[in-house]
Image (cartoon, rainbow, N blue to C red; front, side, top):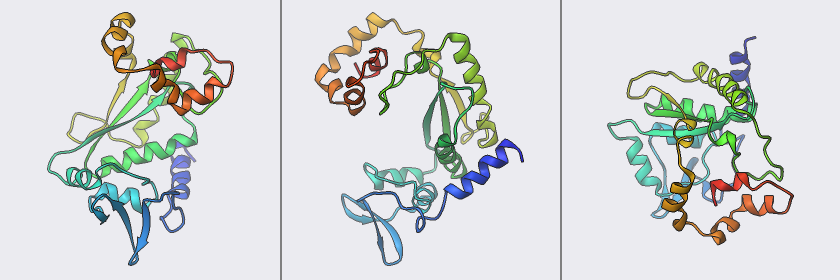
Length: 219
């Protein structure tokens, strides 16, 4: 069995109906045999194909201004949305399959998925709940990892120049050109140390002996 078929087999096991797989969310409840999402204006049931798929498959947790998003997804023009994947290894693990399938359903609903490969953020690390510093990779290793993970998406998404065709971008294209001092001068005043220290990812990592490089994302 090919790698793609194995991943799809795993997907069919993971993406169960909501009756078998229900996220822990106080914003969702069963009502009259249907899944209804609570919004600021009361119970609201989205009708756009993408949101219905996300809810039916148990992907949905919560949303800001659900009615407006639902209306936008039902509009005449495709909506663009991205998910990011850092190049920390030569291939993606099964945990990334959930995000890939979200992009797949997004495209199948007539919208434009953007695959953001983190060739730039991989150079310094991205704060997370982990209490260990990410291993630093050299440029050659990162480039090889980018090539390795990029090939996966062709099996699930249709790339091209059409309005709903997927597009892949690498954030190294713009992050590597940033002048650090100019960046801090322009955007630094908008953020405070207190705000950075309030981030859960910083709190967790601050309890261990860690390099501060990863915190530059929120510093």
